[in-house]
Amino acid sequence: MKKITQILVLLIAVFSNAQKFENLAQTPPQGWNSWNTFGTDINETLVKGIADKFIELGLKDAGYQYIVLDDGWMAKERDGNGNLVADPEKFPNGMKHLADYIHSKGLKFGLYNCAGATTCAGYPGSRGHEYQDAQTYASWDIDYLKYDWCDTGKINAESAYTTMRDALYKAGRPVVFSICEWGDNEPWKWAKDVGHLWRVTGDIINCWDCEVGHGSWSSSGVWKIINMRKEIRKSAGPGHWNDFDMMEVGNGMTNAEDRSHFAMWSMLASPLIMGNDLRTASKETIKTLSNKEVINVNQDKLGIQGFRFTNENNMEIWIKPLDNNQWALTFVNMSNHPLDFVFDWKNHDIGDDVNGRYVDMIKNTFQIRDLFNHKNLGDTSTNLKARIEPHDVLMVTLNK
Ligand code: GLA
Image (spheres, helix red, strand yellow):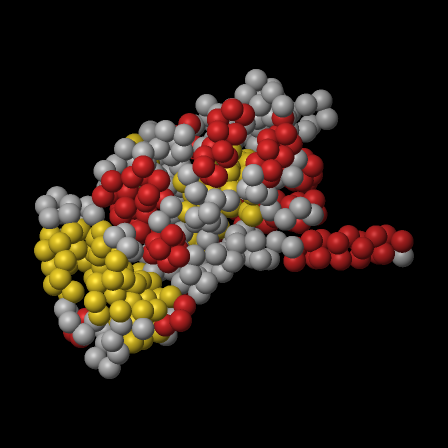
């Protein structure tokens, strides 16, 4: 009898803790992650500098809140009690100190680990230590966990991620749970109640459309990533997002390509996780990353992932239904030369079959707002005429 009572008490505690996780990512998470630029070369001074820049550059005001340390933050060995410890040279004051610093700026703090025995860079993974590690994160006041998939042998992804989720529930501190198994086990089919976001592809790299091999795996440029998955948009929505990986804005593509990349992550309702060095970022990069009009499309409360409408004559056209019967449209010039085009609104049926949203463009007239140039472009009673530079974008919303 005593045992049954204990189990019941535990179940009730876990259930009420689980509720605390429900509303953590009603819109796609916005933040910064160390991996794309720094790899394992991370330390306390860098992270504090990034947190300061969130405030100084207006990124916090633009909605970014999570600062996430990726692989390489740990010491190579657990301590004598099996606890994870921060690398004492990189983080001499430990993780709680860093969490306090980040929280003092009104921001949130995330860490990385892995479902396997070791992380992708060879540090201690969480396999067999899930409940212990979740307690450690709670004791450090961690708000976000990115959980990777290296060194996992034959374990089942759904159960491995569910174990970590339950461990986080039990520890009780609300944590955004970011699943990173690269889409290998189709998380869009099972992860809705396990994590808040799940990677849908392998790693991104800072190019428009390239693929770079690393032996047994390869990284993909922005458009390779976008084109890799079909038919998964219906799985995204408030609380559970398709994650197209951390952004490469500011990491070497042209400003036009960066704008298109940022526009597309917003159209896809992907988490907006910056991956550049904010301490040295150019004005143009920050202008793109903090463009509130574009971010509003990403953060739209319906949480509908956009879709490709057409891709003809070197022009990709994407559509995303928005709250209040508004729509976002993005025109991307895929070619290497400027593109002059005319778009006849009356000849295009704007609609989204998956979500049953349609608009009769003959009976309805919308105001057109250009989100990168911050200006109104008239309305849909006349054809849209525009020139788009190579790999650049025209992103608009249609408003009544
Ligand atoms: C994997 C992930 C990356 C990054 C590295 C760290 O490749 O997909 O995003 O976390 O591991 O080693």
